[in-house]
Image 1 (cartoon, one colour):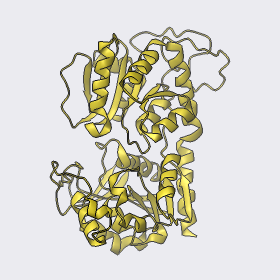
Image 2 (cartoon, one colour):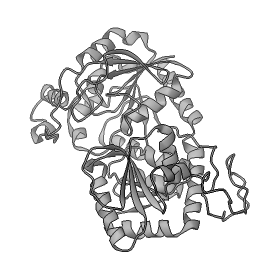
Image 3 (cartoon, helix red, strand yellow):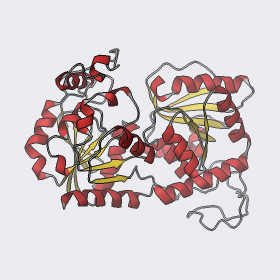
Image 4 (cartoon, helix red, strand yellow):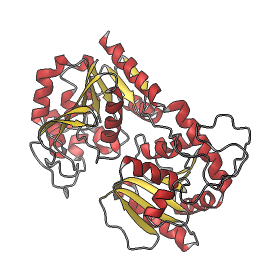
Length: 423
């Protein structure tokens, strides 16, 4: 099949959100199909300024066609949806204009799609609430797959989206929670609907369970290749043990909690640092490590370490080294961070305001969740202080990924969905 992925921005520097999800899926499908990515030249979603060169590019073997944005956005601009747009007092033209201002607005991309859509067997749109999807789905709805990446947010209340979500022939939901939400709000008419999500690799090159934790169940017969023999305490050198490279590089000597992604208030990072400060004040001895793109000021506190934007290999090392991975965002659509933590056997502490994260924790039995500061401190104390609990949660997380998020399963689902709309 020849497949076009349409997404707002695309690059190895972009972590989190539908853009990261799109790249992972595109790379896997490109191993078996002819894949092109249609995207903008923008890197920063707060401004949509053109930073990548216009024209064709290759990113990890995937053909990427970049088109310029026609306008930038003031990062300080208030992105709230006006009440008269939500109420329908102003018509669709005004709603589309508001979406253009939010960006990214790339007429060149839409013109290419209009000219070349017949050359693709399927058009896969990542992210449902931007203008490229709202207008792009109208080009060839019978060959379009929508990956919505939507939660209950202000823009979803714009009346024009009632029509947008009726258009695609297929919808690939990230989670069951997203499916429930969209079906409760919209008259979805897609003939093909499936919860697919994203694949996650199960690393086989490091030992499991975690260093220094004797297995609880000596009869665990489903250990991955490279797992420590059951019933024997690991005796590896501190120089080669799991996570040692990351710990040495960043001079981390005790337990630490890891967050990865966009470090900004909207991802719950401001609240995370506040809650972590309370944990430290109450005697907690772990530190907080933040990896990713820093989009907010960080306090000069001894318990906070900024690790920066890491390569995929370093990111994996960080997830393995962490005592706990924290997922503080209240508005997660899938949470690849949580899934990646599960895949390496690291337990997750999640924000209970995110239905997606709570669903992951309950289904996997691989994490705890908190609703306020006191619960955060209590849960973190329990996770940091109980090695056997972490070992049990870690095994559960790896099994959850093995059962639901293997790449061969995810690729097969996408192929099945696209095959259905070609009939």
